[in-house]
Every structure is written in structure tokens, then in C-alpha cells.
Length: 185
Length: 185
DNA sequence: CATGCAATCTTATCAGTGTCAAGATTGTTT
DNA sequence: AAACAATCTTGACACTGATAAGATTGCATG
Image 1 (cartoon, protein in one colour):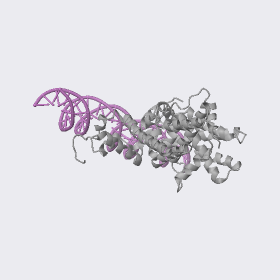
Image 2: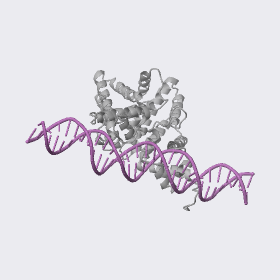
Image 3: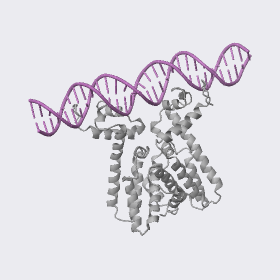
Image 4: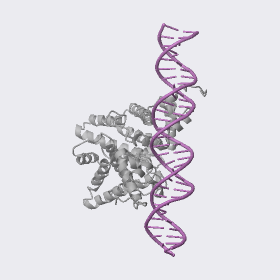
């Protein structure tokens, strides 16, 4: 495990994991490829065997988080049987995911790097929302509006909680629930 | 005006203005102090007479935008007489402000640089919202929840529109209005 | 097994960046 | 006019992203 061999063996994966840990601790703007290489005990040019450039690394690291986010939402969908409560539950998880790692929110949505036109897991929530509204018999135009309103609220609340000092309760889950329930959609 | 003197005379202001223009065109991550100095026709160390460091420059540039944002909201408040429509109108302006300059949204909210605990103009919207709810007779606890829900939605919608491809209509103003009206607060 | 190939890693090296110290130039005050 | 503070330049340092050339290794093919 800790043998020093010429070939690292698992560098790409370790770069991403250590990189994300670094982002969480020191912020994305302080992450450098060289420091990252050093942390992984490898020369400063080694990462460029796995990533075209820094931008490419950041994109792949974002995808890594994105996958976890998607899995979390999908797992949530399967556990919640009550179709009526599913939107609330998904929203709560959406917000909590980024509350637990505020750095991820900034890291993901900061640089306009993420395209929302193509399919992206962040649309997952939007898709589910639209589906639920559809089952509730809401018509297409209104459905899209409701979906965007809900998605905006959830995404916005995630952003606000990722900033300092907006939400501070002992029972955050209840607090989020209360906010999301404060509007009639 | 375009005389080349040793003392620039208005450098601090020009650095901020040209800096923001640069951010809008090429993105905040490509802005460097040296390039900025060059654009202003001044040596690379000159900016450091006006700003402690890059971070300090960014903060002051953010304040510059923040002031415009605040003025815009306040002007909006004065023109709209109907108290019931004021929240919708403010929300619309909030979103449109960042739609017109998506770079500003990323520039302002990306780096966790902005503290929302202390008084910040972004709380202005929240403050007004809470006031309006208060006049509507909503009680304190519920009022706060409604306020946060509305603020989240507006702020989130601003964020989504600042990304590519979420909102694309001929009449964007109507579209935003429709979305904000899709929920009963 | 050995030979060759492709992947991986290292060692320079380059241009660009943030930042500072020292000194030059200027506006302002006394 | 002289002194001072503000402003700007030059020159330097360490750090960064990135590339080219070469070293080391795993693996497939004969």
C-alpha cells in the first residue's frame, strides 16, 4: 500500500480524492496541480498523464461529486414510497447534501462550467418534479413553471445554506422542511 | 484625458471598472493583476498602491457591483406603489439583474467570499420580504419561513438563469413572472 | 522467455502570476 | 522652497500551469 514504486498504480483516482479533500479544507481557489501532485507523493508533471490540463481535472472531479449526488437522489427515491412526499424529501436531501459539504456547492456551480442544457444529474430533480406534477394532473405549461419554481427554491436554498450564517438551527432537517413547506406549489 | 502622466490620477476607479469589464468578457478566473495593470496602461505593481492584494481588489470590485444592485432594488421599490406587487417586481428585477450579467452572479457568489450574517445588500430583498409579510399579518415564525422560501426561489432562479440554457424565451420578463407566480406564498 | 510497445512517471524548462522592496516622480502642505 | 506623503516603476522572488525529452515499468506478442 505504501510502497514507493515508480508506477503509482492508482494515481488518477487518488488525485481526484485528495484533490476534493483539499478543496473542502482550503477552498478550490488554492488548489494547484503541483501541490496536489506533492500530496500524492508524485512529481509535478505526473498528473498530466491522466488529465489534459487543470480544467480537465476540475471537470472530472466535478463529475465525481455529481455521481455521488445522483446516487443519493436515486437512493432517496427508492426508499420513499409515498409519491406525495417524494418532492419534499428529495428537496431536503438536495439541500442537506450541499450543507454537509458547502465547498462542493461552490466547486460545482461557481465557474459556469456546468452545462444545464445537456443532460446533467442536476436536472434529475427537475425531471422527477415534472413527472410528479404530471401525475398530479398539472398541465404541461403550468407544470414546467411549477417545476422551475420548485427547482429554483431548492437549488437556491442549497446555495444560501452553503453560505455562512443563513441557516443555523439545532434541527436543520426540520428547518429546511419548514421552509420548503412554507409555499404552496 | 489620455495624457500619459506619471501619476494616473484615477487608477483605483479605473482598475475596478476595467477589471469588471474583463470579468464579464473573459471570466473571473482569467483575471490577473498584471494583465489588469497593463490594460490600464500602468506597471504591474501599481495596483498595490490601492489594494492590499488581489483578494482585496476582488472584494472591493464585488462591493462596486453590490452597490449597483442595491440602488436598483431601492429604485424599484420607489417606483412600485402597489404593496402587493412589490415582491413580484423585486424578484423579477433580482433575477434580471443577474441574467443581464451572468458573470456578476458567479463573481459575487462563487467563492464564499460574501458573508450573509453581517448586513449585506442581498439581505435587502429578504428584509423587504419580511416586512411585506409582516404587513400581511403573517406571524413571526411563519414569516421567516416564507421569507426564506421566497428568497431561496428568487436567488436560485437568478442562479439557474445565470447558467446556460435554463431560461430561453422571447419574453423573459413574462417567463420569470410566470415562474414566480407558480407558487402560492 | 525475450522483445517491443504503450502507459506512466521524472527531470528539466518555459512563460505567466502574486507580491514585495527599493527607488523615482509627483501633488500637497508647511 | 523644502519636506512629506502618495503614487508609480523597476527588478526581483517564489509559485503556478504546461510541455518536451527521457527513464521506468506492465503487458502483450512472438
